[in-house]
Image (cartoon, rainbow, N blue to C red; front, side, top):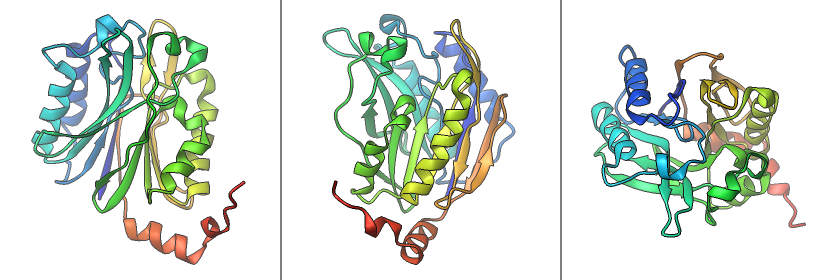
Length: 255
């Protein structure tokens, strides 16, 4: 399967303008049918706590864009979206759309980033999500979730072979982003796809660093700090064969 990561700058709280930027990045990229296309957390608004301004409404601008992208490239698309609860809290979510443009699954971020105030505006999710794509069992996670290895281990118990982490991870902690992504691949013997934004919002600079990592921890594709598309071919047999050849996971203890 081909994995495609879209790293881009975001026009603050402006869905239409940011979607045009994403469209432009895809114009010169050839994407094979059945690919998994990944966009960052809150990919068309930025990491805003203004739930009223950025949440999906009756026009469904964010979902409609993801759906159109999936149909255009006959591929699966995973991207960050914000919805509002009946109590007017936000849900920070990753939604997967199939090649037919229909929603396949949706994950709500389990760990809102308390340090930034996200937990004051966004209600946490409580369940992991696992979907099948290209022969893989895939678990989507969002940004701050990366710091909690226990959710990766729990997903591993559901047979996951690939983790996809979408993010607005600020540049001041860029080293943590790179190190933790690689560590999660190594310790779980799984592919890890990390797609971050770049550019700047009113609060932070973002250094990008999106990457696709194989089950041995080797980096197959990595972005710099500017807008770009990264791609890599992934093979579920590589996960299964490596786990059989080096069966570290069999030695886990329930402590």
